[in-house]
Image (cartoon, rainbow, N blue to C red):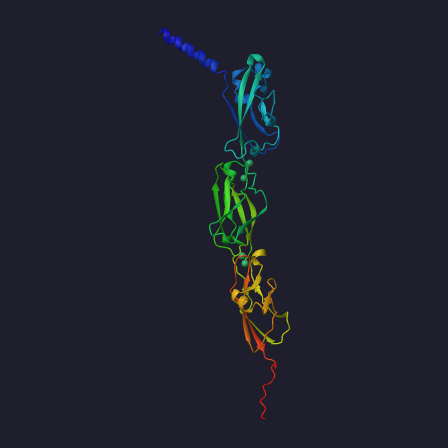
Length: 358
Ligand SMILES: [Ca+2]
Ligand SMILES: [Ca+2]
Ligand SMILES: [Ca+2]
Ligand SMILES: [Ca+2]
């Protein structure tokens, strides 16, 4: 019994000591409120009136405890007499707690003079407002894709940023359903570091020779009500692949010449086109190897212009027609051959064979 009473005494004594320890004071304030916004009164919250007589209360002074070097004190003012805690600046939660779920700052407040000394822990929860729209790093970006890319191939685009807390942060991305959106599908995935990867996937093959630029808009929405949004234009340039061979404008060029056509006379210019870009569309011409072997001494072709010249003597009596086979070539493919059909006109260049009756 004696020992139980002793234990009770100990418990009471321990309890009376702990009653001097003030538990944490919890306040909340919305971000972006004007400077001077009232947040709370530390004296009231710490229940000082219940602890001390009005005479003592008048002597109490409240100040930030500098011992901890708290870096957020500059955001707050503490009235040393009343214990009113107010904001000393417009508080931007999205800077202090970028994209964080919770944003609680801790302040240590000391009560003086010495005989009433106490340290109060003040927690100020800064409430987020949806004051940021998702923002892309640029208004528009240029991307390229080769025309040989297959459906499903992806084109990376930059993600948007929204510094609000997750609930007011980016919730989804969408492809604006106009322009060229049918050619692309929007995909997003979360990377290793938690960063969002946004890409456009090709839904079909592209043909640069049909169309070489596409443009889509991607919109990022946040979780606000109504949601805020940001947009980026993605311009896509289709890069050339050498996927066309040259084609002759005419399958056959018919040419008629007199048999006494002068040497180095141009008799025809053949022309092939190639819709590819730059070097991929540059065309050169040559005789087929058979034509070269048979008629290389009679005709030459200018490889870059497609002009065909007579360089030998044509003789109707030897041959009245010539068929020249020509190939047009880009840097790595040949055309379907084109033909020059040459008809030689007879001139009366043989002395008549007159049989005289004698
Ligand atoms: Ca936001
Ligand atoms: Ca915010
Ligand atoms: Ca080509
Ligand atoms: Ca091409």
